[in-house]
Length: 239
Image (tube, rainbow, N blue to C red):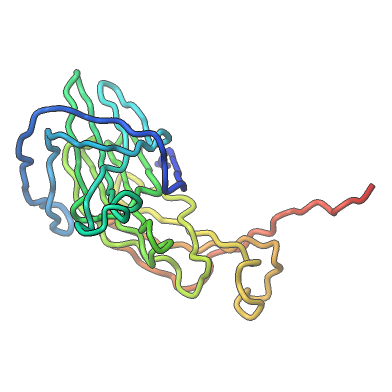
């Protein structure tokens, strides 16, 4: 099955809101399918000072999701640093008027959710987190749910193809019901030195493929481009 895709590339958003609900403790259990992964349940807690990501909102039957940045202190002695960079990923799950959260701010301060892939039929959602201070990181942090957002676990980090600068971006992702899938990265040949283009023209898009056989718990790298796409460019006309 192919996942519907939402991609958000802006790191700084001005819209802010405040969530006020009661506090409780999230349960922690251990998964028993494939690789063992620690599962994290949703919490009911207050998250103040939120930078919304409006493109990361979607609804399934009886359940809605939204993804944003929650304010987080990363340098106590530098308020201005915190104002610019002190945030981390938060996911809200709302069902029958009850709202709970997956709070990843402590583990991933100054990260943001760059890609969301979701499929209601399977109940799977994939979050791909990137670093937001010094530009793209060498890999994406991956968080996964397989039960409609009720419990989450960390997949293996998804490394970007090496020797690409600017770093190759995650372009697409799919996984089937058995956990077999692939992540596709794309980079423009024009951004690479001529010696690293593999004989391709600057107008070529270069795609790399990274595969998984266990639903994103681990990844296998092919180490070379999977295919090339020559982008048609209209001839420049002067009038």
